[in-house]
Length: 275
Image 1 (cartoon, rainbow, N blue to C red):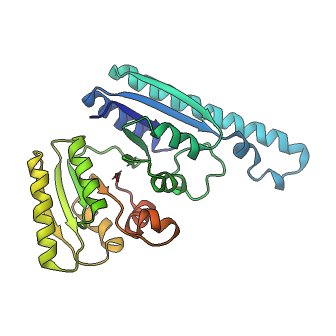
Image 2 (cartoon, one colour):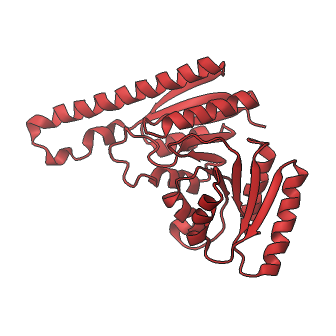
């Protein structure tokens, strides 16, 4: 059951899609939305100003702050207009400080998070790698999470990456049980090197999905999922990829797994991430 959805209002090309996706889900599930903005004034003001001569430093900082505040106001206005037009209960939370900490705090009390695939907050002038904040959130366990692309898609085809691990099974079950798009066709895909074991995994998983009323097909695609997953999803014209954790190694990979990390960095297809 979904009753509270958190939406990142980031001022990026992904933000309008995130708003539209969240509003439509809120309508179909009678849920309320929380739109969140996070402005770290220290990062906005300080990025690169050490290279600027002192007389121009204050004006550059003020200009950046004005840009950030303007982007926030525009995002909030678009969010509130969309919610009002759809008659969706909503509120806006405008935070300051560290974006990662703020989003983790709010995620505790929401059933689902909707953000952009790339820079979550455009007005963070020191964001670094565009996907870095999203990767940190996923690594911290902020899930289930929908990471939207910059183009709105109707959810007709959803590919579920499945390897038989408990983590990938949890992701599949959570997606199926939430019934975000009950009319979507599901495709279960495994990359198991053994054909017999792959068939056994896929048959059992497909039966589970069918028991929940979904249309299901499946495919075994032996090989490295880091290389094969996105091309396979693109070829099938998937509108979303469902993933969970699948590997354990060091640092980031210890939390995310190689395949999930590679997919987060390279995909243009929206993701549903669960644990």
